Image (cartoon, rainbow, N blue to C red; front, side, top):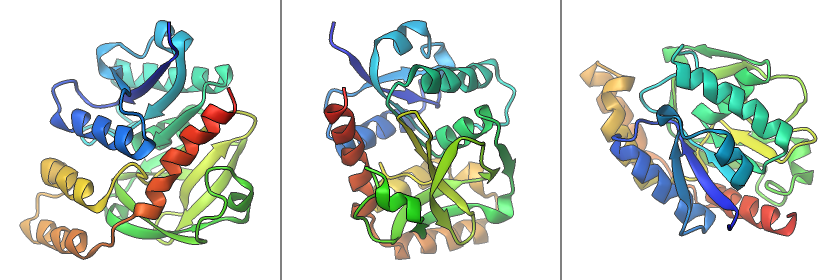
Length: 241
């Protein structure tokens, strides 16, 4: 059996954005046969962790890591297992928040601090020595879309990127091949706008605020450089079997 390379979807199976997310990860990472497994349907299980050679954990437009759904709590436990088993993994947004919470960090919701669109992040000195971030510009435009944010990182991780509005933007788990970011390197401007249009009711019930976000999205730059992080991750995994 070939080792499995899998996107763990943190969306409902009938959510059209789960398939959009699969396409985004597959395209940006260069894995046309990337599988998808739905955590909400119980597919994040022992068999998947036993067989996976690479895992992506994505976002979740309709859920929060602070929700007490049984599948969310199971996902938090499985994130710790992924670290303990040293399965190569990347987590974006909801996955980043979930990993932070599962490892002992603090996640909070503050709608006044939500970020939607493309924004700059600053790489830390540690990023210069990281295989996924080395050689990238010290300031990097990235795609963002979230309510929740990580106020306090867990111990045992190295901060790789900071933001101007939300400080904690990316880290690597020390002594494990698991990277995570609040931002979405798998997205481009067009796919971020597509996702915003689908989830806009979750982010704002105020038409004027929605129009403001539309303008921010339209005026945002594209983020091809940040997308390169996904192929760097796959290249690192392939070079370190």
